[in-house]
Length: 460
Image 1 (cartoon, one colour):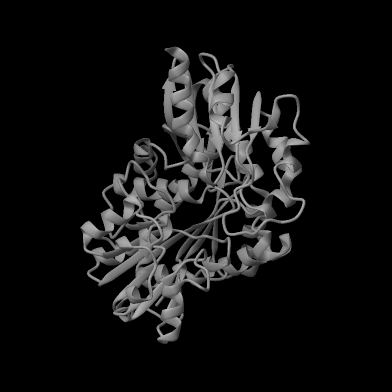
Image 2: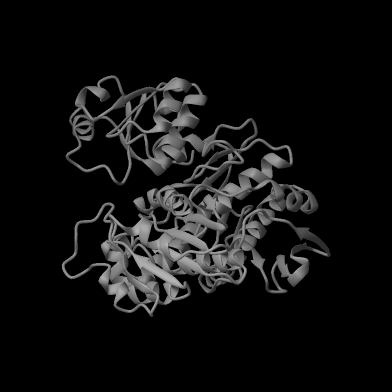
């Protein structure tokens, strides 16, 4: 039993507060397909809610205490406030209230669990693993924090006893899982609003690695200092095997950059060409992680590498929003300086010598305060960098913390962006061959279509 208190059979009639969220909807979708009685609610009528209703869930738009009257278990995500009427009613009735991660852990049951963690790249790597396993004829269950075009959905209940899941470290909830195989793409200081210090972040990943059984494996990126240090500490502890992937010759799965001949992956004495539809060295590393997982599950390395050609990306991960007169517009979820640097490196490779223009929206006041200088340094890799106001998400404003902490440090191409004119302003400087990239974990994604419209209007 993965969850310390619950398994799937004990959930009974289960209600999700905030069911429209990508993580919550993923678990609800899996449990509906497994025959559980599922209901859910959200403040807005989101497209995924219609999909869940069609699958058999009872869905409510708007929160009300009566929505939980028939529930036996309630799931509430981190974003649900304590005064939510459904959460208050559930607690008053004495119903079990689970965190999203606890419900997912219960859904995993006795499956062989592959948990993908890391400061960056979790959704893409989890998506690659699921696409790969389907491509070689396996049918895993999966739960991913992004929609995946190659899969059609972000979650499904598979026919084989393998469960692939994104493991979110942001609030420590990834410690609720009991994986057999854990992937750690990287370990950096982030989510300091929860952890307080970088040392606490690193310690949580140590706790995560200790969840692995003796016959499991920690699969870690040798190219990332934090992940490599975690693997070394895990190996010294002797609790489980470590498998390294990356460009180092000492890695178990080695990634090769062959220049004009593209990328390749070596496993043992064999080397195979790596063909990907998604750009960037970070995505090649994610692909190497997926190969390492597949080999651990008994898939032939050659078949694993070949299956990755079917991966076309995940939603909001360098996602093409449109192309007008040779100007391509992409959207990316990057919200940490390392992720911003990776997204810009990918944009540079796609632009092929042309200019890159970025519309960036900082996510969280606390993250902006901690990493303003690092964000500015990353954004200076663009030719134009416009910065929107901070997207607050779950946080209240912090006095003195605004986007100006970033824009004050930007070079000549950087300046603040006005909400009403940002799409027009970023489109104005783009010429054929250029790339425009919207970046951030907030509602900046809505600007992609607006920018495409501005580019079209400019052509008329």
